Length: 358
Image 1 (spheres, rainbow, N blue to C red):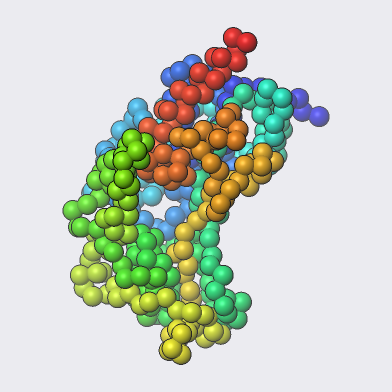
Image 2 (image 1 turned 120 degrees about the vertical axis):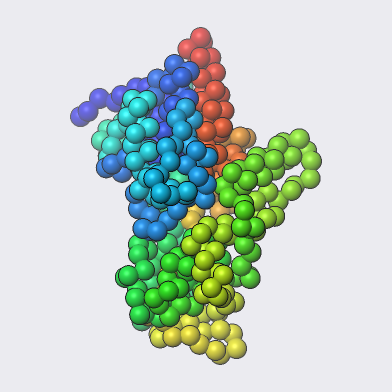
């Protein structure tokens, strides 16, 4: 039997959030390990569709301490460029990442937390959960899904428009993923784009830089007891990145209201109207990938864990990083995660220091 290993902090997840947390913990002199289930660096960016682009220029899509270099010929870098940046970041700061390691559960063990994995057990004074949401796609429970005779896939499974050339495709979802994939498919397929409400495009001059500022201002207002500004949601749902803007301006992105059910040959609306389909692509979002925290008994509504900042209310030795605004303004973005990672690292450094003095 392999002996349990000890460290001050276990970070679960080696994507952008886990690396940002590691950067700040290292600067504070806190011992830690990063456990990553992927076999190679780059987090979820390794698994996105081919044409995905960031919402911001490289310099405004950086983790703490290291500017992302520009991608030659591209104002908005692609996913491959992000993967290369994360690989370089991990190497540059010599972050102790172990992979592939899958975490099965986190348990209370007296003054420590016990982290059970497929490669052994760790004991730590604190755990940072940085697993993101990509690994837990959400599919709505619509009638007829099991009856549909064509192909069904989620955003996480879509790769390139060539796979659907000449086919009848229904894309479901009015957010950024839905708009980008619909724009990807608008040229070479018989596309039906379905959204819950009419698409709300942000102004063409707004990108991730402005969105980060808006999200931060909202968080500050809430912390100070002022009225909720609604943050990014007040501006719209879709960033008009160049491919989306082009398809929209050419009249190729015409949204249809949400259908009520699937039928063997396609989809059907409440009034009986139908659209034939060979494939349905569900761009319907994600849920937090937190099943390994179940032994702690912290999950609440929609799978969220109650937090103050990044710290779990029910288990103060646990911090959650990078899941969206509920764990820090814009914390699910490259540019936004740094601030939340810094705050989590500082709290953990104080916790670890206090425990050592006892």
